[in-house]
Length: 55
Image 1 (cartoon, rainbow, N blue to C red):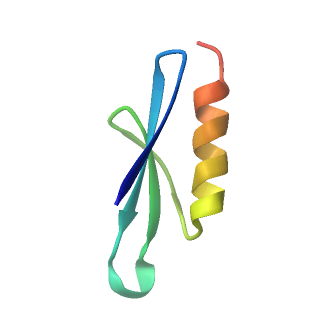
Image 2 (cartoon, helix red, strand yellow):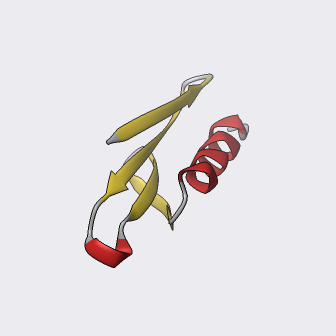
Image 3 (cartoon, rainbow, N blue to C red):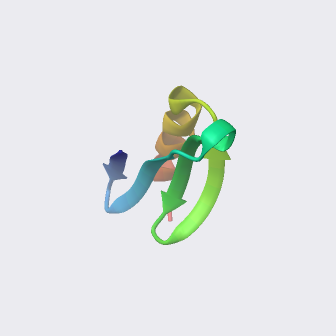
């Protein structure tokens, strides 16, 4: 499962990675792994913050 946040040309992807007890959401800015989050809302907040940042 993948969600995308895009704002002013900045794209951040949220991907769910199922891997047993380590399953969770991974936040990518482009091809760069930013952070792994256990909760969708935590990952979503991080993605919005990254997308909202200026260049």
